Length: 224
Image (cartoon, rainbow, N blue to C red; front, top):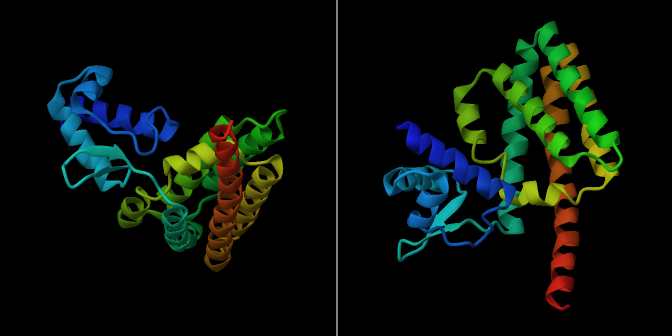
């Protein structure tokens, strides 16, 4: 894989996740090549990778669009995440070291500070949350799990809606991380798996509530 392709992939993926490229938007190779500063060949390769991650989709006429996830799609992704990340948490607990527990604790302390800021620092929360879950997945030491979860963790709809979470939902996430830390400190895989599965299920319901509120805002804007 060329450096130009890797750069184009990273840039387009970032634009999708940030909302700079919106759901349903058509992706033209020429326009993306100009924005990324590469030729069209790396763009085609990058779009194929993103299609494999379900971030873009191709129509019957071979036009490419940013994927538009329905609530059912997101529910399915969260259900798979609950199973896979629960298993990852069990494996991580069985392989956990004191230094990794301390690293996770420091990461969650940063998450807590972001949540308690006025207003809550959602960007810092998202960054810290991503790091917290990445450490667990790395500790689980399963390339297959990492590959499977790679397409499920960062849907752009989840990124967008996280900005509408209330402080209470963010604090619940922080608290569930604290319980995971307790399970990891005791190397209790069954406990860690149960907490992680519940954590992901709760995150889905927080997403669904925020999504409903965001849809109501969009309707109000559409009707003036």
